[in-house]
Length: 192
Image 1 (cartoon, rainbow, N blue to C red):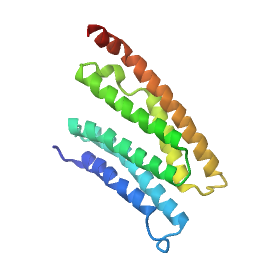
Image 2 (tube, helix red, strand yellow; image 1 turned 60 degrees about the vertical axis):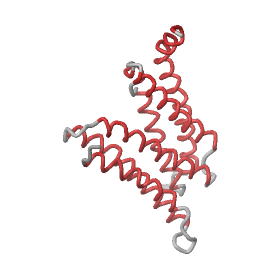
Image 3 (cartoon, rainbow, N blue to C red; image 1 turned 90 degrees about the vertical axis):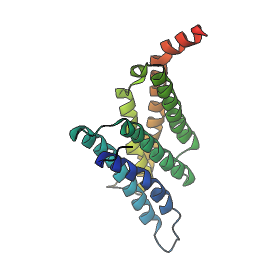
Image 4 (tube, rainbow, N blue to C red; image 1 turned 135 degrees about the vertical axis):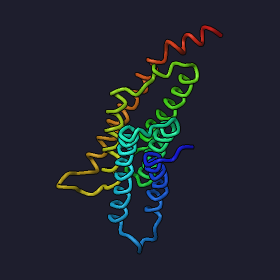
């Protein structure tokens, strides 16, 4: 298993997951509700920044690896899933939104794995739609974690709109990836 700065940043993102969750289990006299929200938001935003940084550094320092390519999306999906579960627990988003987003991630990960196994991974390479979905998600989650008015903006309403937009984009991108993979799925089904 290779170890370099980009992979270290990815591992730090994974280590941040229990920190994000633990913030909400601290004794009441250790932190106010607002302090918890601020800490969780900061942890999530820092993790999101390491996601950008690890990819950038891997390319810039020529330290890309198969292990890094595997670990990076796993870390992303775990962080997003953990944050969504926390938001559902706090009553800040609906379980249906979390189920759509987490379910799509599991489905597309399995689809990509299967497509790679049969040598057709290019059919389900990351698309611009997937990137837009991720951007909406990565904007909505910290807004919902923070959940306090910010510069006069109603973060509760804004966060909920964004997370629903992310959920709709999630379904749309899942449909896109399934459509791209369909010729291979149909071909493999016909062969049996």
